[in-house]
Each structure stands twice: as C-alpha cells, then as structure tokens.
Length: 276
Image (cartoon, rainbow, N blue to C red):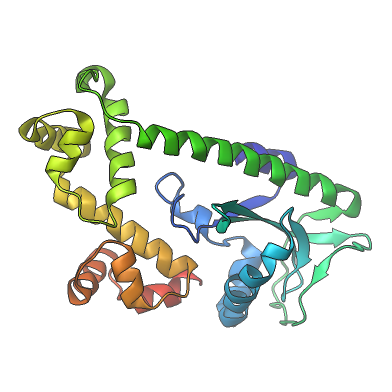
C-alpha cells in the first residue's frame, strides 16, 4: 500500500465489508481523511455516506477491473473491488485529485454538492495517468489476494506440538493466537480450544496469552469482537442487533454496555460519527 501511494502520490483508503482487514491495518486507513473529504463531510456527511456506502457498493460489481469516478463533491478518485468467494470483501479508493484533461471515461455522480469555500490543495492528475493508476490498483489487489490466501492456508493448518518456545518464537505464537481468534471469535471459542490449536496444555496457554498480550484470554477475545463490530458499524448498514451477533456477542444489552464502555459511544452514535 505504501508502495502504491509512493508511486501515484494518492492516498489509499480501504472499505472492509468483510471485516477481515482491520486486524492488520491502522484505523485511519479505513476512512476518507484527506483535507478535501474532511471539509465536505463536515457539511454534507449524508451525501458522502449515500455515495460511498449505498450507491457505490451497489454499482461497483459492474466495474470488476475498477473505475475512475467524480464524486458528488467534484473530486476524482480511482476505485476497485476485491472479491473473495464471489462477494465484495474489500474496496480500495485512491484519491482524491483534480482531473487534468477531458477524462472521457470518467464516471460522474449524478448529484452535486457545493464545495466548501476553503481552498483545498489536491494533486492534478493528467488523463494519461488514469489507466496507470487503475493498473497499479489491480496489481495491489493481486498482491493482497495472494497474501490473504496464504494467511487462510496458514490458519487452516493443523497445529503441531513441536512449536518453538515463546522466548524464541514469541512473534510466531502471537500470530498463531491472533489468527485463531480472528477465525473463531464470532463463535464461542474457549481457552481449551486455543490450547488444542497451539498443541499446549490449558495452564500453559493461559500463561502464554498473558505473557504475549498482557491480558487474559477473555479480554483478548472481547477486544477482537469489539474491533469486528466497530468495523461492521463503519462499513455496513446492518442493524445493530445483527452487528452484535455477527461480532460474537450473545446478548444485545451486554454488547451495548461493553461497546459504550470501550469506545465512549453507543453503537449508533459510533456509526454516525465514524463517517465524519
């Protein structure tokens, strides 16, 4: 992703409908945070949400190799979907910029939102570079799909007792624990399940989790569930009750209390502010 940004001079934003990238990327990667977007969202957040979430996700399957479009605020950006198991798992946005040239193949939004009076500095991209940017997005997509496939294969392998001691291979053990929780947190995994996954006894696994992460298994599991529900609130329009169960929480009231204690906002408040 950094290589793409260095090559193009554009910021890369990721929408994560499958909630499968958030363990690996910083939170700022998941929202449009350029100065132009922040200025527009401050006044017309509803228009951004309608364009980025509602309409774009409905239209993007018509452009499997990506497209360049002009949003409602007049900014241009390059967008490409990433499909896993025939469903949109991620959407990559590269932008925002000003069009230099006719941009004959530009997809234009039917709506127009007045821009803020503040002058916004954006890169000016010649039309001749548009195809190059789209191809760079396709290459990035291929690399990340390859990485995702290897991650899934690694998570699916049967554990063996012959793992290195944590002192020698703590990073490997931590990755194995994160992968296990990532795959299982929406169900009801126990410390016994994790111990079996690692090929260790329960007592040793309890101490290992505390040693590597500084907290117990239940708290680590809860953190994973909170991250998933936060991602679903940011990137989908699922009702809060469905978000609760999809994240692995079994009780809606408990989910509300836990979420508000962690984020300082109710799930609905978080959804409203996450797009701003």
